[in-house]
Image (cartoon, rainbow, N blue to C red; front, side, top):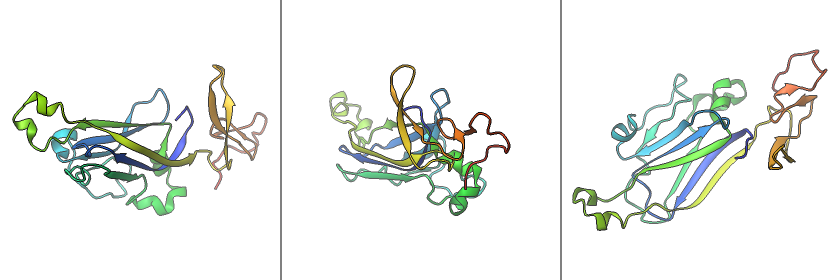
Length: 198
């Protein structure tokens, strides 16, 4: 994404190669923030990511990235899909409008996929470099679903040209709000404090 906050609903990967044994999805909320984990996938969650396999999402940990071995087996050899839904099984998903923590959880400006460990089907035990060089990663399709984050004060995002003449996007703000995400009041509209719209 290009410098604009989005509310991410899903991330879907389709692999041309076999799916990796270990891979992860990360997000960040602006170009200067640290990468935060969204989800881990591994046949060895403890060994690779120091997290237990599976886990139950509760109100206390609903904004914590979990690890699963669900998509880390050797089949299919091609065309395997991985779908991550940002709100699936999150207890406050049905009260999303009132959960500031979940609103932060689904907000991102950038998404990163790291492919950390390849499936070698046991060939790494023999250590033959010729055999190991025959393995590869290949993602044939990446789809990210979401919408512009406009705090309820816009129904669309529109392109604009920044000071470096790059095309970026901003919310088409209403209700006397302003900013890339309609995150503040317009100048001189200060009778009431800014609030997100419901």
